Length: 390
Image 1 (cartoon, rainbow, N blue to C red):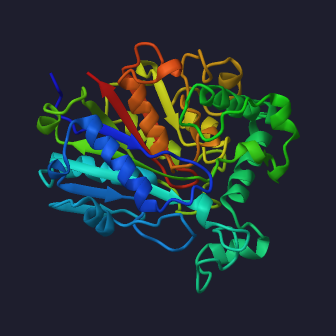
Image 2: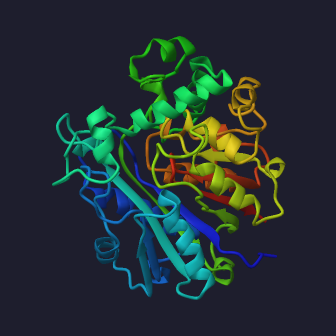
């Protein structure tokens, strides 16, 4: 029996890489056609489309495609479309797609994320350059720029520093995150970085924003990922066993800034995680695979605590006990994550989770994986989703 839930029925990912020089639409078309083949659908079956955040020019290559041009390029005739720049950010198109198919707005929604960051950005044109892509700096950035806190690495760095101070975490613990995900990447032919990474390599790499070093930061790439979200009755006719969206969480109970949360050892993830578990009878011990946003390595312990896999301040011990790496009870980012497989703003993490639940993980396959949790976002933005293979 397929429960009365929206489901993921197909996923696809383009060949990703550094400085590929390929147009974003080439990557997107490759990923979309893969997702259609995975689901056993044709373009005529797709009647909805959604993305995050829509076409934007605030940073080169960060969001080069909107729903309109993708509809045209793929020849789609949709009844429903959405581009979501705010809310639970990277998770937003998947969440609104699930709500769209459950309310009859569409039957099969193509959700996508495409980037050409690696090819498009330069030393003088990127998000962390003051004024790059902006006619005027305003809002909360106007307070950060004078302090030279230009990049999300700075904002994540101060959260990491506070967490280290409060709970005794060290760079050795974050090394376990980075090296563990690199070991997963070695078994993933699609990962952009497949060179072994030792603790010594990690600790000797240059500092980016203390206490975060080079290997604490995700890797900008060129690539695209597509995910098809289907109505429950429509999912029955797809080629794969549907992956039911058992619950979603996107609560936010703090100001929409990185620096004004009452407790800087938590993120919006903590609100979204609590919201997720309030909507389902599943519990953390039911989960087999974790897909946790790792724009920076410090986000992984934050998400572990936010989703209740360990208590507040206990992530360092949970990680040190070997829970999250290859062979661990709660394997995290089994494709290598964004730290090793490349940054697709969470879509790559979800793609990997789906492969695991379908048993397509190859050498990195988690045995008998049936339930996965995905958390996307850092700082104040967050969305969480629980997937189950019936």
